[in-house]
Length: 195
Image (cartoon, rainbow, N blue to C red; front, side):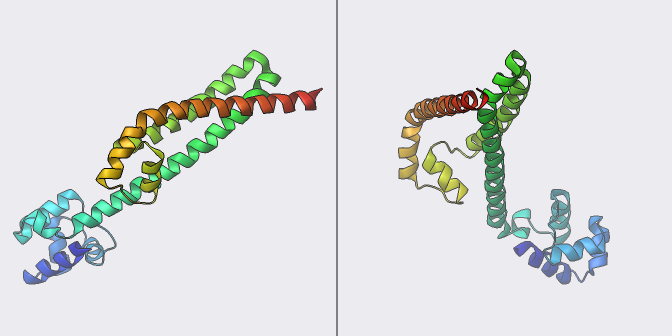
């Protein structure tokens, strides 16, 4: 990152040692060393102090790092999306697979564990939806592009935005059909094995 080079450059121009700079920005010498060796990144308060001490604008100090910071944030969003998506998928599978056995074994008492599983699954679904909304991704193509760290061009994005209402209706129909089919199959298998 450029910031490490900038800090070292301005520190040497002012003829300051790492320890002297550390005293002026209220951190340890090791912290300054970590900044200059790209092991850590200064917080906002420290950046403002450095900017003031070096008598340069904040923009000039972090020159080149803004794009790198955007890439890091984007990577973190993708990892978070994939993580939440994986957890949601596992919970949804457990919810669907456990529905019929729970109700066959526990009768109406099955509403308690099933309700708990349902609430947990919905929690993860909401986290996934929140990330989708934050990054303006809804359709399958948009989601795939996002998870690969890519963005659709303006024309493709406009086409995908136009597809959203139809895909939402289709998702509901397919989800209901798949869920009903899985529950039916589990019910048939339970009936065969228990009789």
